Image 1 (tube, rainbow, N blue to C red):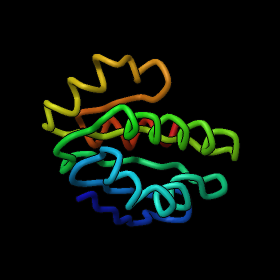
Image 2 (image 1 turned 180 degrees about the vertical axis):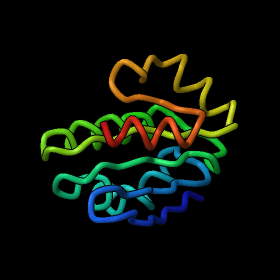
Image 3 (image 1 turned 30 degrees about the vertical axis):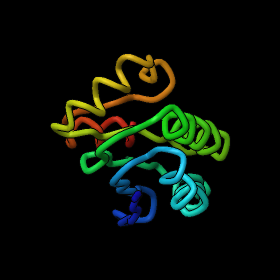
Image 4 (image 1 turned 45 degrees about the vertical axis):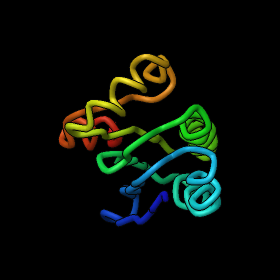
Length: 115
């Protein structure tokens, strides 16, 4: 089962934490809330995937579509995976880094989203 929560850091930066399985059923549970949180007007968003146990193509598609929507609203979205090697490897294999910056270091993710 997928989970979602968030924390705002000031007026412009939002950390959105996704957890569990980001497969079809998991995305169905979090999609609407994720879109609302990730696509807020001019928000800079760090999506934290450290507790994601599995990410399917539908989960990757959700990240990309929300990153594009966020950018259209004047914001920026980056991904933080920490030491979650399975998710990092999956994202790396798909080439998502050409659309969305992916970081294993939180300080780098924060600096990137603020640039």
